[in-house]
Amino acid sequence: MPLPGLLNAVAYAPRHRGELLEMLEETANKIVEVMKTTMPRHAINLYTMLASAKALPVAVKGGPPPLNPLQYADFAADIIARLESTGFYEEARPLRRALMLGKLPVYDLARSYLLGDLDSIVSVSRELGAAEWIVAFLAAAVAAGGARAIRAMLESDGSLPAPGQDAACPVCGRSLENGRCSFCLYAQR
Image 1: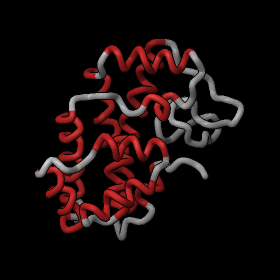
Image 2 (image 1 turned 90 degrees about the horizontal axis):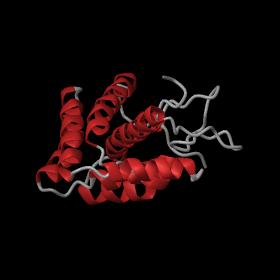
Image 3 (image 1 turned 90 degrees about the vertical axis):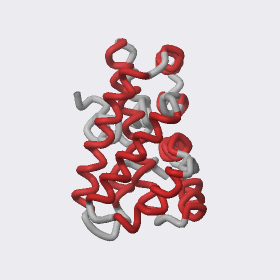
């Protein structure tokens, strides 16, 4: 089964799918800018080592960048606020409540989305009393931001790996279309 991409994250939204997809792209790109400037050196070394050892996909093997938990909480707060302003106030309420109580596992959700572990996203959504699609949306935004930051870092270091034999993205493992990845933007910049 292919790993979930950005379209999967909005496929089950009850309305405004196009607007949500655009918001997902914008949010992921904002996250990239923060991650590129705050990614710890040991994480950069890990991703570079994974790329040179051909341990692909790099972002799946290494996980999202290990930032301060407060930075992940800030990403979630921004995503939740944008969802609320787009007309999903009621749907976002369980996420807001969990975030305020410190019980929203943002990093774990992003890691699960990178791995394609949608069962854990379903489990978290049930635990929070939130719609599965909105939890998947949050997870996808942070996961895509993390994968894009890793891709940008590997690109700037000159250690971006080539695609493997399976034609999957060497950074995030998603399917490549015409040699490009819409999730981490591999070969699109």
